[in-house]
Picture (cartoon, one colour):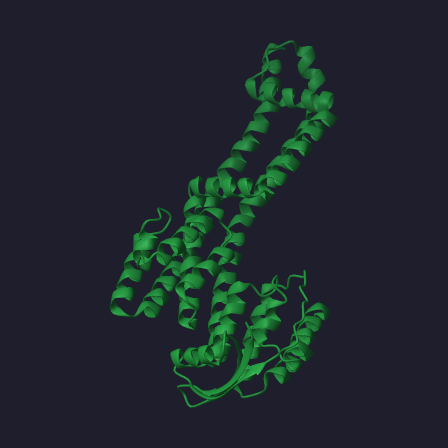
Length: 399
């Protein structure tokens, strides 16, 4: 299928020049007509193909800044290659500078921006490339970049909020485990001979601690090897398709956390669907991109099933409703949008609702976790104290 270079006037009266993949000139004219653009000229275009698949992943902050800068410069009417050169001069990251240089070189050689970005899949995901591609074809590249920036910013905020909520309990759990190991290996050895010589019946907390002490001193290396082997086996299994799917399913069943995972995936689904639908990407193609973008394998499978139902002619709302992992609110809003012809507005409203819902859930999760962790930490300290002082109290009563 050849590339065609076209020059056309869009609905706003702007002249648009771009390259499109099509079977023939007739197909190009038909596509321009669908986009409400008046063709001026259409000709076969042969671009230089470059394959430069980079493995380096760029930080989301850098991609977000790049998107905002490119939007601002293009909005000011600056040619795209010049925009890229300017952005390159403003970044201090050598690898990202090289990436921008490669993208600019591809465009100078005849490639479209979307094709140049596609050479760096770990930095520019499917949603990014496809949104840019639709913006190029329709002559609304600036609007597509603005929507992408909004999506990336909100998505990054949610990820940071979740990490922040889980940081405190993670530190406390590691601290408790470290305190237990130090107590068992350094404190108990000083008291073990005294407890053994007393001949008194040891209380349960002391027996548990002593058991761990003898286990560590007698079979420490074997225990470390077994734990290391189990950890490696778990990591290996988690990287398999079956293991990841199983773990993602279990995450949805965890009390409190499962509800957060569910809301995160629904929020991302709604925001992605809104971003792509408002950019002009077809529903079926949007579902494919969403399937690739979501992290949870359960939701990936559900989105694939939704796409199949839509491809067979079912309305979007009915296709989503058949999945048990999506809320009725999402189905209701999509249904209203489909019937009223305002799907974009409804998707925008529901995506904002889920974003606020996730933010509130993360905040309440933090509030809920802190007292639980405090109680667990206090219980652990009491347990360790009882393991030492109860037998000493018994020995004092004997003597």
